[in-house]
Length: 177
Image 1 (cartoon, rainbow, N blue to C red):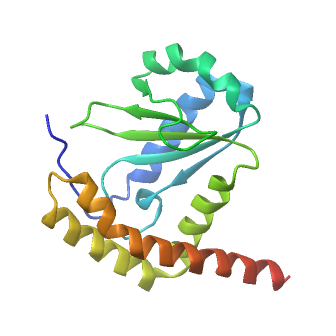
Image 2 (spheres, rainbow, N blue to C red; image 1 turned 45 degrees about the vertical axis):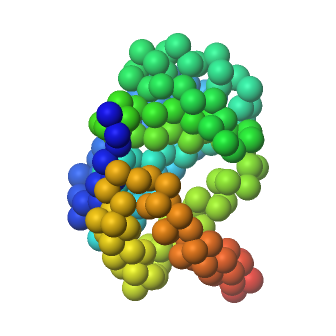
């Protein structure tokens, strides 16, 4: 089945879905977890998003995560290995047409952690930028309802621009102290 790109209005229940699943992940991974962050568009209040909760799990030792594949599978997650990002472990909950969660596991200090948190926090602090991103995603979902490649490519330029702004914004906050 071809995965349909669906972008829906913000759901105030998304933070609760994150928290519930975060508790389940901690129960599986235990003391390996350093922190769990709600990332992606569902973590940004008031913007439209694909209804998939993205979670960033920060761990001390990424190599130990492969030992949890069977237990994660029992929790409904499909292990995807690095899935194109060296040093990451990625898990998908649900089928291709019914995904509900993505788990991105990264070791403490991985640059992807700061990247995701900067983007999320910048968008929350700059709601006008977040709304522009929201409108773009809605438009792309209509233009590419069955084409994740087109959808992703259409977001790429804006995401790169926002990444630069988010990094500069975070640096300005550090310098202001």
